[in-house]
Image 1 (cartoon, rainbow, N blue to C red):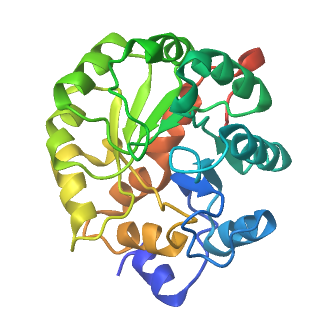
Image 2 (cartoon, helix red, strand yellow):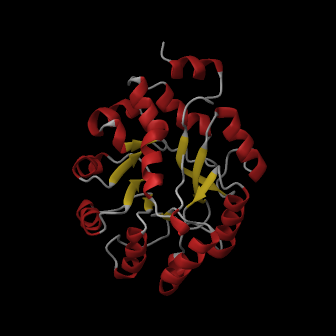
Length: 264
């Protein structure tokens, strides 16, 4: 029995392993998890042994005022800088403000890059209004996390033209597997892996250095998201890559103000 299965079965925290959640949320819309307040989130991370969480807002892109919810996330990330990093989530009701909003929230601490969502955000990833923001994120080697990038040919165009951005498919997409394998800057997240041995299939198809774990917390329980990796029929080293080492490499590429690094 490998160490991950053993600890998971006994409910032990993974304090001696690097666990980084690449895809989770701060907010309340459709939140089925009772421990969704800011202090409870950190306690839950400690309970499982998660060292760092990469968060975006839950509401923006579906409902709510984008400034209010991005501000709340920025405050939370500022309160816990060693535990929380954050993506800016735009509202496409204000496309003309997107670039200025991105710069403003980057200064407030939403410094990972940008998270976008297909629900109620009508766009293609090749749309002109996105190009200045993609260019800025490309300059800092940041991240674009997307619920679903849309057409594969559109996605391939941005992968080629913004090669210093780490693009992450927020959920498993079989139609993107060939692109993950072909482009060094494209990764797949395990978020909401529901199928039996889906994580093992992802690793076998794409390699553990192109797959990152995501829980979708606070919509789903963190243990559910990480458990699918803990119990996957892959090697311990492959689990370590998916659970944190791959995301660590992505984060450490990001050029922070003053030359700082995440140092995870």
